[in-house]
Length: 114
Image (cartoon, rainbow, N blue to C red; front, top):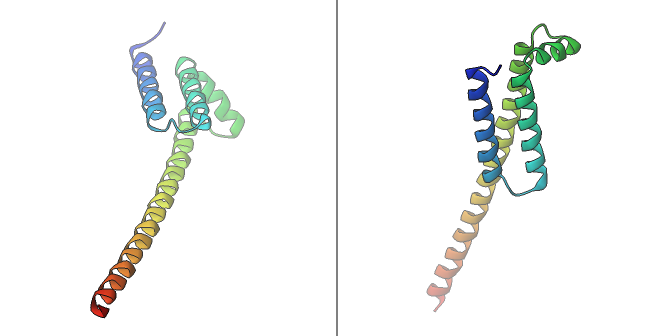
């Protein structure tokens, strides 16, 4: 029998998958990863004892602990990915500002010459 929490979790996973796909629909790899996470999430929601079995295979005591540890790694990966994107944007802004400054200096120099 499906419990209320399972319905809520499945709805949440589906909403996240749809939102992620709409946000990152740039490649097939993104769609494949979203579907993989969706299927895995729904599977673990329907069969929560499986997480404990997988956790024991990996040397972790409980399935909830394994999910927690994997979540920490996933969020660390996301933070590093976002940091790299911010650094890239900072470099692009710096390049644009330098180019604009040089263009203004050249324009000002040309006005003084005339």
